[in-house]
Structures are given as structure tokens and as C-alpha cells.
Image (cartoon, rainbow over all chains, first blue to last red; front, side):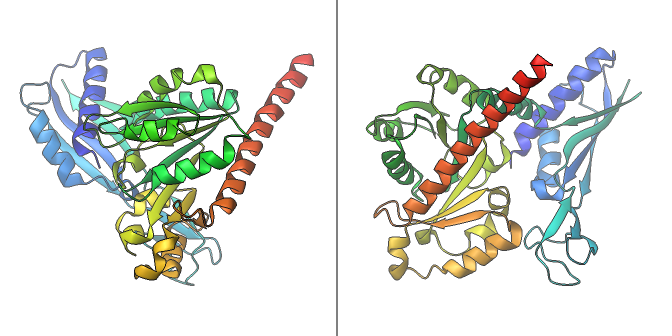
Length: 114
Length: 233
């Protein structure tokens, strides 16, 4: 994954929006990251800390919400969350024809500032 | 003050990829994004494939490498138009690079465009280029564990080419295990066993590819007929 360049994208996106809202100090940024994207929250936090000094994010905190992949078996309709990325197998009937809903999210949910 | 954004992190790339896809579709070009680890045989497969197809269909190639134009020179010898992208350290191609590179190929009006991504099983999986099909190459010399170790690229693949089947007797590569592993994360992926060196198994892959290109042209003509019909109403 590209946590550093992803974080650069985050900061740019938020900065642009903050400018439009006449916000000059950001206090909090919240990201939603799906499990299937394989982006690592720890690396995102590290990248955020590395990039923020001297910017409008200098005193901001970053919150990363991890989103599990939600799955439904096409055979027995059992719904379940994916524990591990690998192996899309229905825990109830062992079927491998699984519909995956979510888990691919990767977006800035909101930010707070003044 | 709280501002709700819901803006995607790779949104900029996805937007350009979307534009690329529309542009390719409007020209009826089938676009293949070829991905694998370094040394699995992407370029050799490409040479073989082009050799068979060059008389039937107009082909363009975008080569992605960190440095050098060695691959572009190899492909050029097949008599097709090639553009080399040197990423100079960047580990993947992105939609913007494809948009720029394609401008140099547009005049030759390809119907089939191959993009050979940078050899890497991790990062290229993240970046949509505007392609129709994602083709991942895995070679028998790389071992059995690549599918389980790099699930993202295989989960998003439309096709997996298992290359270097001529080396099977000399490795402990287990074709059935790998097919099973792919099936567990991506049951709809098509799998072809090929050898770029001996040409074994290439025919099935090439026939399949040609059919995809025909379907793409048909779908374009279908759309334009539909648009014409709607225009007449």
C-alpha cells in the first residue's frame, strides 16, 4: 500500500475544502478504511504525524475507522463478516460463491476545524 | 466546525481512470492491464501473444518500467507501436501516466492495447488505469504461495495466466492448489496454463482474448447504433 501518498491525498483534499470554508486550523480528521483495501491504519497514522508539522494540521488528530467486509452466501443466504482477507468461504455451508458488500471503502469521512 | 466530506482517497486517480475508460470505449479499444512480479514472464507472454495476433488486429503497447527501454525495444521488434513509461522509482503505473502515454499511440488507431505494468504484485493492484481486463501472471518458478500472500491483486484479476508450465517437472509448483487458492478469493477469474517460452497453451488464451476484443467492438457498435436510433426518434 501507499500510506504516505494516500495521506498526502487526504491532506490535500481536506486543505482544499478547508480553504473554501475559511477554516485555517484543523483539529480532527476522520478516515474510513475498508479491510479489503489492505491499507494499514498504523502506517496512515505514522504518515499523518510525519506530514503535519508546519501545516494547518499541526495540532490535529487522526481517527481511522476500520470497516470489515460484509459478506452474504449466495447459497444459504447466511450473512457474516470476513475475519481474514483470505478465503471467501461461507462459515455455515462451506460454499465459496459469496457476495461481498463493503470492505473496499477508503475515504475521508469528515474533518473538524476552526 | 465539522465538515462532512466523504471524499475518496484515490478519487483523483479514479476520475482519470474513468475518463480513460470512456475514451477507450468510444474508440472500441480493448485494454489489458498486465501485472505480475518481476521475472514471471510478462514481456515474453506479450511477445508470443503479439506474434499470433499482429496479422489479425491492430495492437498498441504501453510498457511500464522503473528504468530502461529494454522491454519496449523487445516489443517493437514484433512490428507494433510501443510507448515506454519510465516511472523512475515509482512502483506502479497510474491513470494519468496512461492518459499521457496513449496520446502517442492514438494516431496508430490500435484496437487492442496492452499495458505492461511495473513488475510488482502489491501496488499496481490499487491503481485503476481505465482497463477492461486485469491479467495477472504467476510463474511456476515463483512457488505455490503467491496467491495467498498477495490476495488483492488476485482478487481483482479477470484472468490469471500460470506461466512457465515447461518448468513444472523441475519445481514443486502445485497447479491444483493454486487453482483452488484463486477459486477461494476470486471464483470468476479465468485461468490459463501457458508457457511463453515453448508456446504451449498460448492458443486458448489468444482465442479467448480475440473473442473479448470482438465483444468490445460489438458493444461499441451496439451503443452507436442505439445512439443513432435514439437520435432519429
